[in-house]
Length: 297
Image (cartoon, rainbow, N blue to C red):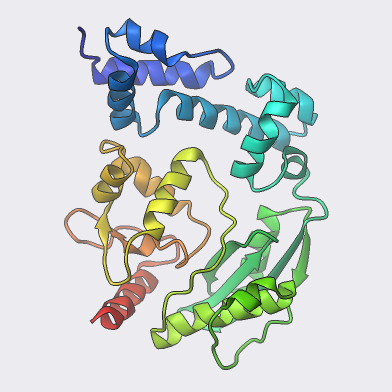
């Protein structure tokens, strides 16, 4: 039995990414190293952060995104990415893209996305939501820049400015809110998040429309499970998603988070307890952690 070296596994991972359109049977990969499929997959995932299949799927999805953004016909892009047939890709790609491949290529044409901007104790906050849930929640010092960032994310969507109040008494989101008109839902969600930020109210549990790679989704889901008032290190997160050597990739996934607070990447610190990075500024990260620590007491 041969124990695969890190170098050999990294070389294999690069080959899978480069030739994602080819079949990579787990049994064949494992046999090449004299291991059982389960043992090989554990070793591979521990180093790379994904199983061989998840890595191949992520690589194919990346190719699909690039081809669609370049304007390729949907069918051509699907086949070139290695999915084999259009019928196979739609469920998988829609889950990870947050929309159908056609809509992704075209910048979500016609998709209604409601958005609002509100002043909070941490500065301006823009929130936007599709019919699936919140897809965008970002802090900024400039409302125009926040709106421009949303437009870049969904260049051909119908961006509808919500009538959500610029300020007002905070409320909590309820099941009734989730069934109401889009403006009413967004208003309630903004109020719930504002209450959490301004008055240390309960962290709102809102429906989310997250869009990322397979690895990013694993990280973001783990972050959502970090309890209020607690923190984790990047290494803790890597271990928690069974990818203990993917600490740096965890940091990159945290930096790619588009949904502030609701996906609490601010609860992830460096191993020495230092704040680490935060795409919306370390002062905001420090303020969020201080408020949550007070609430948790």
